Image (cartoon, rainbow, N blue to C red; front, side):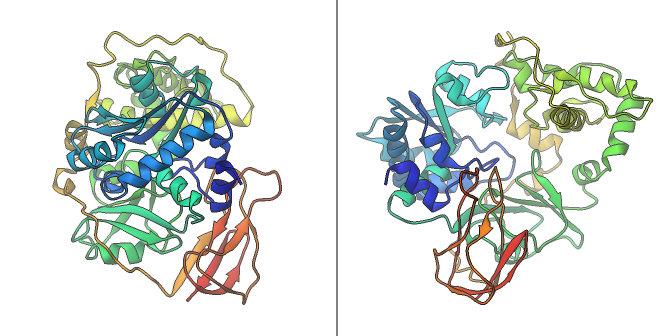
Length: 437
C-alpha cells in the first residue's frame, strides 16, 4: 500500500481549513511541499502547540509527502514570534531536506496564495490551486496525521484551542465528536452568561450558540465572546440587514479593496465594486459581481478596513454563491502582478486585535493534557470536502477505538470516519453516528 492509500484509509483531511481529503494531493506531482504553520487567526494557538509537541512527526510527514509527490523542496512556514515552535521544528529539520521559513506576524499570512508566493515567489493562477504552480500545501497538523497514517493510525483526535471568555484559555487534544461544552469545561468554564462561539476563529469562523456542537476533523478551536461584544453584534446581524446597510451607506472609499490581501498580490479582487453592485438590486434579484471571484473570505475588509463598519466580505460571499449557482466562471485577467504596496499594507495581528476589541482575551493558551473521554460522542458523517460517509456499522454494534464507522461511496470524494473510542453505536442518522461508551 502506497502513502496515498495509507492516508486515505486513515481518513486524513486538511486539519486547518476546508478539509480537502489529503490522499488526493499525495497522488499528484509537485516540486515543493509546504507546511502551513502561519496560524494567523487572533487568539488561536493550536498549530504552535502541534509544532512544539510534534515537531519530529511533522518533519517525518513532510518527508513522506515529498517522496510521494516527487518534491525536492520542503518548507515549514512559521511565524517568527512562535519561538518555541521555531526552535523545536528547526531541531527536527536538522539533517533533512526540510527547512523552516519565518513569516511575519500579520493577517492573513496563512492564506495559501500568500504563503505560496512568500515561499516560492510563484503566483497561483486566478481561480487555481497550489498544484497549478507545482506546490502541495497542508496544515502542520495534517502532516503529523500523515506520519501517523504511515504507522497505521487513523485520525480519531483533534488538537484545538479554547479561548476568549473562559476562565483559563487552553489548547487540548480531544476525541472527535466531543462537544464544545466539554472542551469549555476543560478550560475552566465560561466567564459570560450569554456566550457565542466563533468556531475556527473570529475572522473566518462560523458562529453558534450551541455548546453541544461536536468537534470535527477540520476544527481549529473556538473563540467565545459575550453576545453583546461589538464583534458579535456585527457578525450576528441577519444577511439581509447587512446588505441593506451596505446599499444605503457605502461611499466607495476603496479601503476594503486597498487592504485586501488578494488585491495586493495582484488579483482582480475589488470589494468596493462588489459593494457598488448592491445599489443595483432594486428588483430583488440576487446580485453577483466577478470582482468577488478571487476573494478568500479572510474578513479584513469587513472587520478591519471599512471605516463605516459595512459588510464587503459578506457581499463577496453572496456574489460568489450566486455565481456558483449560475455556474458563472471567472473571465477576468489571468496575469496577476503584486501591488507596489504589497508589503507595506500588511495588517499586524496586534493591530487587528485592537480593532476587534479583544486585547483582554489575547492570552496564552498552553497545552493541557486531559483525558477527555465523554460518555457520548456525536460524529458527523461529513467532516471533509466532498460527500458524506455512508455508515459502515449498525445500531447496537460494539466497536473498538480506530474501527471504521463510515466510508464515502465508491469513487466519491470524501474521507473515512473512525471510532475515537471503544463503545456502542446508539444512533445512526443521515447526518451523524452517536457512539456511547
